Length: 489
Picture 1 (cartoon, one colour):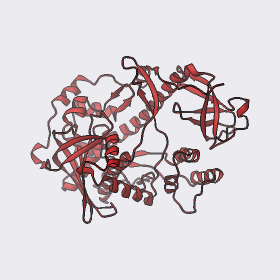
Picture 2 (cartoon, rainbow, N blue to C red; picture 1 turned 90 degrees about the horizontal axis):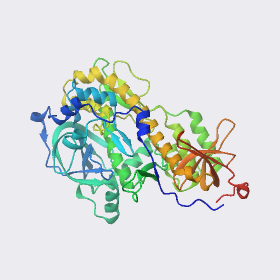
Picture 3 (spheres, rainbow, N blue to C red; picture 1 turned 120 degrees about the vertical axis):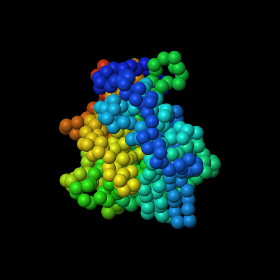
Picture 4 (cartoon, rainbow, N blue to C red; picture 1 turned 30 degrees about the vertical axis):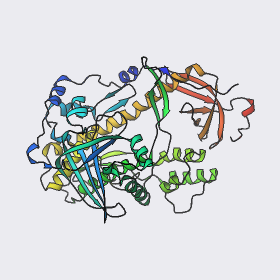
């Protein structure tokens, strides 16, 4: 049989998924009115830092702009100014908007729409750090040495004005052409240093194909969707390091208070992986012929792999088992068991996306109070536990929602191709309790596979199941008699 032809797209109804998860299609009118009339509660006490030429870097077309940065190379290292939308200043703690955002927890991004944490009039309008607009912000100032390690850091309320809205593909192209915006000219060097610092801490960064569902550009007037691998550029990585550094500094601020009577904070935590999981990865690496020197951390081993090889795909997939148990941990009079985020290799807090994530509003208020030497607002103390619960609940929904949208698209796009043969990489071999797992590159699909395909090999598989009603896709190996010996390709 001929290998499958190019699959294009299919009409997909994501409304079914929204209904299944009970996602509100409309924002309550009372909360929308509050958002429309929102005013800066700290208008009279802000530092005017509109002199700093900030820029934003986001996905193309994004309007909910939480972050703006300016990075300067200094004789001693780097000076980072990082402005974060000051949502706590424009959301009344006891209002309808606060209640609704607590119920939502975070923004949910579906292929055909966004179910936002805040009404768009706020998140994409008056609170967004849009270019040319003066906005209230929580302004982080982080002084780093020549290794990009933080030496001094603080956050204060300020007025800022972004000069330009940049996106990741544009920043990457500018970096390659040597024409980066002056406000981020130091970002490549800074980002590389921070990545190296993370590896030295034991951080683990996975390099897996990120599936996404995008509209078919050839069908502008229909609801056709296709699967794609989300591009990841070096610019994404550099910009991510700015956010990670800020979250590390925020955690240090909250952990600096060791008095059990006054301590308060909200950390993003992840327990250390069990030794058995790391031992299993060592066995897998040895079976694949990947050299892993004794004592080398997992993250550094993964970083040294060619991401385009089957071995890298297998090992990165298995490494997901090391990054489990992420949660939100409240700091109070009782010392929690876990303070670190093992994937980052340090204590960490979410403070850089308050337009999209509830936890950031609370953690930012704590850091602002600690840096100003003022009491943490009572609404933060009273509501911190509920905010953490909302984040745990919405995190669980978000993960299932993303998977449901991808599963629905996979099964819908592949339904007409039953019986066709596809090339795949076996990312996990089967055993008596589970089927093998494979990744098909075109279209990008991860699925179960019956038979006994050998782990880490390129094989041909046959599509046996593609059921949009059940959102299930399944393949079988060998694809035909020619593939029974599973020759490596």
